[in-house]
Image 1 (tube, one colour):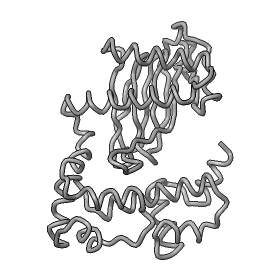
Image 2 (cartoon, rainbow, N blue to C red):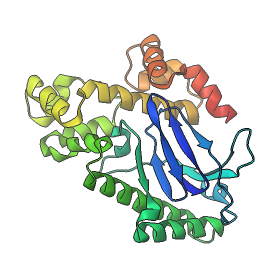
Image 3 (cartoon, one colour):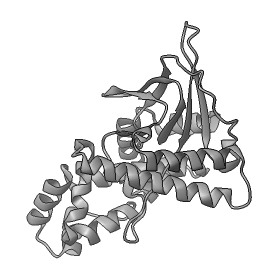
Image 4 (cartoon, rainbow, N blue to C red):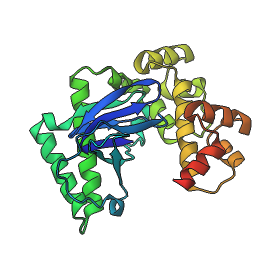
Length: 267
């Protein structure tokens, strides 16, 4: 989930992570399944355009400062996906939040001003334009954090080992298949031990840890967007049983599959 702060100041409170202070111009990318909330510390008097993000499949959050009359926090939020070299959902490799202040860079600020203007007055082709602008924003965000040596970007090291790419692509695009360390090693043309070591050195965690994360992400999409039975979703996402799926899903999201589906439908 990508959050861009239009006005006010506060924080993005994220489970198992220090809160990230935000103000107008801040951009925060929260990895999938990280429970989080926007909190306002006031200062929302800045004039902002009357946005109509719902027409563009975006969310618009107005968060008040609890118990105080100190203004509001205004944020534009959207789910984001990034692909590379034919692989989809590359951003699902991220393990930690990524944050930057767009207002510190005139070029980035101009880009976000164009995005807000498009949202304020949607017209012909606005959805395509907003997607393109959001992608450009994400590229700027990732590039600037890599240049700054941000530890949250360590997961991108796995992309630097070209010999791992075929296995990584299979995991990203087909997480529900019956992958094993042996089958992934064969795709990479390595022995099991060499592949496991190279992958862990590059990504920081083993290949099956990542695969389980990607399977849960796929399951979440199916729970939210389909009426398939939970047992069938478990099968489609590569889990050996419904109970194994429920344990993995609950560990990752802190909600059972049934609770997650109900929460998505209620929202």
